[in-house]
Amino acid sequence: MKREDVKKFDGKDGKRAYIIFKNKIYDVTNSKLWKNGTHMSRHQAGEDLTNFISMAPHGEDVLQRDNIKFVDNLEDDTTTINDDKKDKLRVLYSKLHPHPILIHYPMGIFYFGALMQLLYIITNNENFGKSAFYALIVATLSIFPAVFSGILSWWINYDLTLTKIFKNKITFSIILILLSLIVISLKIMSNNNPQSTIYNILYSVGYFIIIPTVTFIAYNGGKITWPH
Image: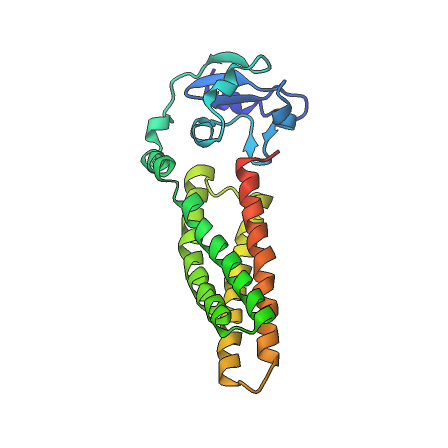
């Protein structure tokens, strides 16, 4: 069976759902995870999923389950997995995992900073306030490598497929960056206007709004790895 033939089996309109893995064709129609030919709201039946399965949290042993059947070997064509220019990057990425590593820095530092700000409000201890502000600056700077590595991961592993999850991550990452910069500006204005309390209030409110924002981004990241 040729690649063009496999594309016809997309699992829609009563058709069987076929996928390609390492030049072998599998029927995933009976799998509950492939309803209407779609898996995890981003993988479509009829496509070559060799790279995606290789990067998935599960192994290729899932294709040995009773509800998944081997259909045929893929006939030779001009498109092979070795032709994919991203292969080497995928292998390197799978070894280094830059995004899962880098994303923990802004998350952890933002949480720490918010705790310091809360303690400052409760105790009025300036050391807590300074710690919160320094943490805010470091966390804001650490967003950029985290976002860059996330875009790299999105390109390498998902071919920039824009699903709802990725839309959420992109949108709220932009919001997080803007919000962080605004909160930093509010603190600077507060220092320049020590007699005004409005900047301090807005600074604290903005700081605490950052926490659900970064948590929502992390939640959507978790849905990529564990969709159910």
